[in-house]
Length: 500
Ligand SMILES: [Zn+2]
Image (cartoon, rainbow, N blue to C red; front, side, top):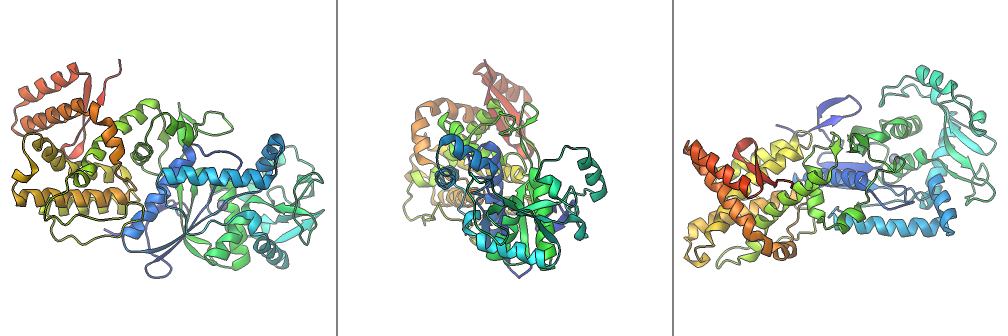
């Protein structure tokens, strides 16, 4: 099996072949920093963080660039409302962005250019387009001529003619009246006299939104890159326009692969600022949801699908994470004599280790994990492998309730330890980092959890012995304790508390 991604350009799952051997250049559209980030942002950046970690684990050299849009209409409006400068507002929200992303263990990009710090590159880019007669200036604004670019619409599949007809019915703003074609988009916008502005060959103004990404990609990564990332809401017009600008200017394909994540839905509607149904990352984490539980919740859904957000689903994910965290804690808690303790820096992306001490079952799970991830980043499949791998560890933890660790046979101990090392490594590929504090804090409630785990083990055993009467009896016993069981493929059983 080889690495495959669904490319939005071809709408097909394609083999991933890099431009330069073993190197991956990635650009991801960043946030407009006028406010705090919401769950939609967390979803997007968590998915791309896993993509990056997986590529590094596979041995690729990755350069990851993500921008900050620190000047636009929303920023100007918000700064005016708060009575501060756009710079001060952007600076504050960039700091808050870093806090949220760091909490969620999202690796910082290698480079994070800001629009206001790249004005020179942006202006040069627009000038090149003007020289090529693909852009025109009118009254202090500069527009991109969509009909001068043959492939306009290749990403979104929208046809120019239809678009023009649609746009013709709309009421035009004053600025739009200066355009030659209703689909032409702004590369440079003339500023109102009371707004922040920057000097340019076309007078005082500021860059349009799309041009900054084209200029930054060229500046930081070159004319062609391997992967361009973003939310599916950016396909049109943002990404379509990025392609038009870059390819018209450079005469080269901007990106080989375009990956887009699905949206977060609340009650069947897209979560967005404009609909007012958004939940900020900050408020979720304040409500006692651990950052890793949030990561776990997001990764349960594959990146391209819509993610349905409900309190219940989030709570169930917290339970799942708690169980996994319990197993991930194992090797850190039991410092075993003569054991080669796996010393890894949990804050750095991990490279694949060659572990020849693994037993056959573990090797199989390792290869299944890789197959899932290679198949367009199937994170839900990858998580099911983590659970399978954690089963023998959980069993061992239960055994330690009756037996001292020093009484356990060395071979047995080594085997469990090797499994734990592998579990730790694979969890880190998904950016799931053990939280020892969380475990100790929850220890008091774990009496029950451990009893539940025991009963689930007994039920699995009864099922494998074809003693279905006993298996049902155990299921009922758990039901009486308020626990519902969900049987998943590969013999994995998950549980959740029945709501009152
Ligand atoms: Zn962009």
